[in-house]
Amino acid sequence: MTEALPSVALAAPGGRRMALPVIEAAVLAILALAPLVLQDYLTVYATRVLILCLFALSFDLVWGYAGIMSFGQSLFFGSAGYGVALIARDLDIASIAVVIPAGVLIGFVGAMLLGGFLLLGRHPSSVIFVSLGTMTGAYAADRLARGWYYLGGQNGIPSIQSMNIGTYELSEGPVFYYLALAILVAVYMLCRFLVRSQFGLALAGLRENEQRIAFFGYKVQHLKAIIFTLSGAIAGLAGSLYAFHEGFVWPNMLGVVMSTQVVLYVLFGGAGTLIGAVIGTVVIEAVSFWLSNSYQDIWPIILGVLLLLVIMFRPAGLVSLVLSERERVGSFGRPGRGGGDGTA
Amino acid sequence: MALLEATGIVKTFGKLTALNGAALSVAANEFHGLIGPNGSGKSTLMKCVAGAEVPTTGRVSFAGADITEASPAERARAGMSLKFQITSVLPALTLYDNVLLALQGKSSLVGLVFSRSRGVLHDKVMGMLERFRLAGRANDPASALSHGQQQWLEIAMALASEPKLLLLDEPTGGMSLEERRVTGELLQPIKAGCSLVIVEHDLDFIRDICDRLTVLDQGSVLCSGTVQEIQSNPKVQEVYLRRA
Ligand SMILES: Nc1ncnc2c1ncn2[C@@H]1O[C@H](COP(=O)(O)OP(=O)(O)O)[C@@H](O)[C@H]1O
Ligand SMILES: [Mg+2]
Image (cartoon, rainbow over the protein chains, first blue to last red):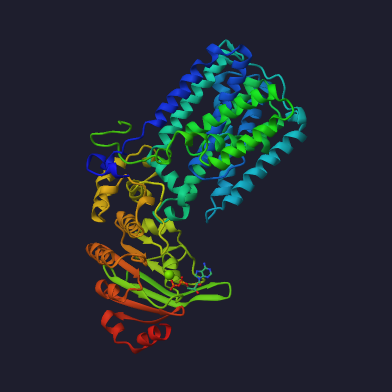
């Protein structure tokens, strides 16, 4: 703590801030090179994992950054998936320029409506109210889809046509993988910009002490509704990619199991760091892939124990093994005069 | 006319009546002390003024507007600022970020997203930290401060936005004598542009910095007046002796 004393260090966050960019670069390198070494069927599996990373980012924003416990992320993920599946089936449109924006829009509007209802009361809503409200939403949507013939009932909507870019048909494989990676990187950078801005500082205040910051003039409920809506849009983006990648949508995509899964990804990897959401998703999915091959019957138990161990002994997630608390929270001050961010 | 005018404030918690018709009137640039025995309702009255509690009945007006029903954010935007009895700096954030967080509370959403005020506010943040003798620790997390320093940080945060009225609930709790003296010194200069309502047990401290006092007892105002008037009031002596 003492090295941050005199004037150079005043505005510039002190040394020891190198870990995060290094982790980010390493993860990016691994993801970028993966298809070169993976067999084709594994690249397909890895594409699904990238899309789930995107989904995990959406939950990380609301819970890890803003402290809103949402069990309803699957609602936006699944609605967007169903939405684009219907567009493809009934309107025969699968152009990437239409379906991806449509998926984003569905997630955005869905989250705006639910968030408006759950978060915009006169008094701040309790964590319990919000988590139960979002969970109920996901549960209800799942049941609704199961019972609705137009949506294919229990079976969902099968054999969605491939997404296309102009005349090019985008089927699963390396091209889809790199598309998903490009989108993931773009969304990641957007989130990174946001959480390091002064808005990110407001989110940190929200998460740490929501009552207190209201007395600084923050419109706490508005901030929450905005970040919730944004995260819904990202979940919608992920859901629409997922629908085209898998080629079908089914009610589980909307339900509580899917929501819980994304909660686990983020808690495991490290809530409140963007890279933690990505690492958590990749590690959980990789481990469950491997376990389900090698230990067919008992793998869910092994995975469950693993998750429990991490959450018990590393409440800040896997990334906290290499990332200090200070760097995880970060600092928001003006980049320093002289010595800057990350010069050590 | 008074900057802050609270009248007929009743606040009940279930069967318990914490405030029973309390009143508080503070003029512009006045330092007003709120004293009374433990449990007499000082903190509750501060919270009713600040918007942390809604009075059961009664009115609060501030700068000419009725704010009885206003949200905390609306009060802050009207120029009210506070520090509660329980210190609530944000421990995980640096001192710098704590003050910046307080300063940017009224910025627009777009301004926040694009960090428009970060550069402009930098000097203010550092100025505030310097004033409260914390500049050298700008990059430490607030959790690393002593209790007394956390109180200073919180006063710095409350003052950062240049409020018209500052509410301080026991700002010197847990401070050493020397820290108390410094706190008094640090508060003096704000008088130029700001009124103060302060709850304090240390009567010497209160006497040194306040213009007027209000004494609460069992949820009602026992008396209110200049420091000299209160000091010579036999009822006040009695209350303090009775509880001592
Ligand atoms: N949130 C609350 N719920 C129930 N009782 C409360 C609450 N806040 C304060 N009280 C009660 O109201 C009375 C006044 O409390 P308070 O305003 O904190 O007194 P003071 O600050 O003068 O010591 C006390 O009897 C206290 O127990
Ligand atoms: Mg009190």
